[in-house]
Image (cartoon, rainbow, N blue to C red; front, side, top):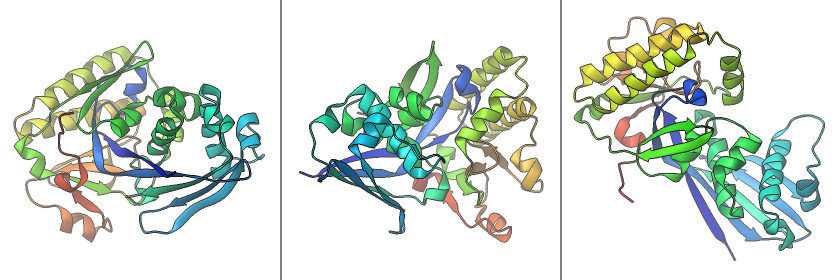
Length: 309
């Protein structure tokens, strides 16, 4: 019997990095996401096939139930070893999906290009958690690590305010429908950034006044959610960029790549890659395309509308 699970992609608007230390963060689920399709199989193994949004196969392999239960991994870290680790952690939380089955054929389907960084891993983890009936946050913490905001986006169809309280995820659904979303665009920087590497770099960074920085970011986040004008929201995003630039000791993306741009540019998630958020009075498509950045997506085409559940 075929079963299909789906999870939303994500964009972290405020609180990047500091969300790991308890900052309140504003995040948006995207219209793009990933399917997980489960069918019965044989031979006490999983035959796995993953499709990118263009229909190409980016991963295909088989994993034995024995490898999953005993966490038998190859010496080098590979896509297969990463997937086996996730499945092993799911098995440790609920072994029934292995113990009661003769095998599976599993297919994943991305609705966004894998390189975009909208949550290939988090949507996978949340889908596997749904399938195996385990807690997705616990599965994430035990496999990839991270704050879990991306899991919250995977599970919700509206903007969220997210933070960790004594290590527990706190998710608050929001409405965010200001008129100035028509001035917001998301631009792909032609480079996928590793969240795991970025988190490691952050943990090794200068975090002397981290509590003060968290309070500042919390205030910016709340003010941003209550913004009524594009000018107000833009100013807050620029303040946010300045705070994080000082903590990470990295130039802002506008300083580094787009110093002549008229408008606001804010990094989202891991700095240095994936998408940035752009606020501009005029459509900025020609500006970015002239500089080799071809993927410019308006807010309304990227972000799920607020759905009250």
